[in-house]
Length: 152
Image 1 (cartoon, rainbow, N blue to C red):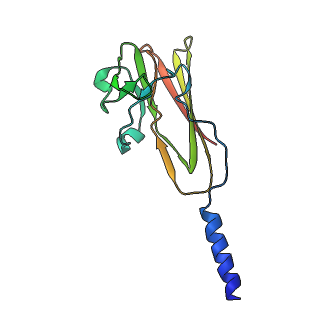
Image 2 (cartoon, rainbow, N blue to C red):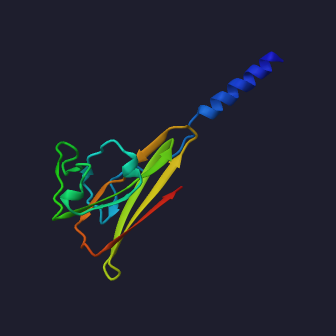
């Protein structure tokens, strides 16, 4: 009888700690208006960052001193805000995660839509966080940026 209990306990523990096999798409920078080869530096995520939707259009608003690499991470340089706008929105997922980022622009409505889809699977207790920083071509100051995060 003790052996049966031992087997049940071991199987319960091992099944609660296993990661289910899952297939997620590869992580890419993003699609749509997002500059495809622009890697943004990744400072430590703070509560202040998490609590906001970030639309950075001038250097004076770049208080996290974010930089961009256009050569696959070999070098990082200052962001040219006369050419680009930087967007960021916090999201997190559990276990295995891919953040699918897409930015679209509607000129007639003067709106930019930043959609982040958090694809996740597995049954572990690891959290993955991302500020989802992306660089897009400069948008006019009178455009509204609409952020949307969905989890699947």
